[in-house]
Image (cartoon, rainbow, N blue to C red; front, side):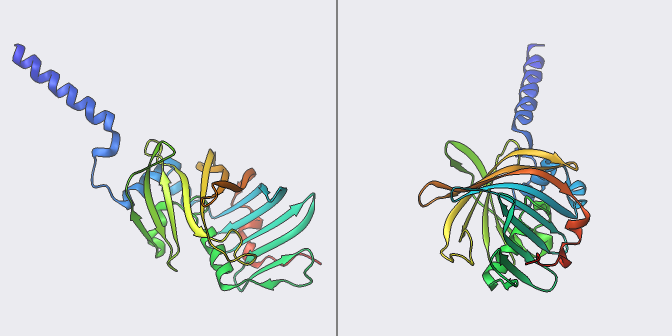
Length: 257
């Protein structure tokens, strides 16, 4: 009888250990599995893929200024952002179906973006925390590479590198408890067509909220890893999906002069 009780106790202990380990003991540990866990944690593939366009009102803090941004993007591969200061437009940038352009308040006509500037806008659309789920990344002709588990500022992260079609790389750091992306590291200019000098930038994401059944970060902070100083930060003031304006942004016209 004692032996039977001992065996039963061992089985209970084993079950408890597996339960405490969560999904860590189920299946091979791959980049695709981390991506699937992330999309599941954000609301599931079906909910994410139902988001055809996003429409964000932002408050942006950079260079001692507080700016208001209106960002729209859709799954046709188009985007536009209008930036205002104290209610006046200071900058517009867009990637449409025919061209990529920018226009400051002083410009009389839109100016074409550089090849690097256009690529940066495409990376923003493909960003795994905007329109698309991380589970869609490989199916879109890109690549995920599993990195080593790392500790940053005393916290443990799972690392997955998102490698875009043009070779651009973004290092994603996910919280192993929530499976949400908390940090992203890139080697890039802050504004490529203003200053092409590339920096090591870490973006920290927080304040995840549900919109249309999908979790999105409402706060992001960009740090220059070289200096350790914050370069900019932004907060979402309003987040809508599938608006008429965002769905039609491929054909949006330049602002009037």
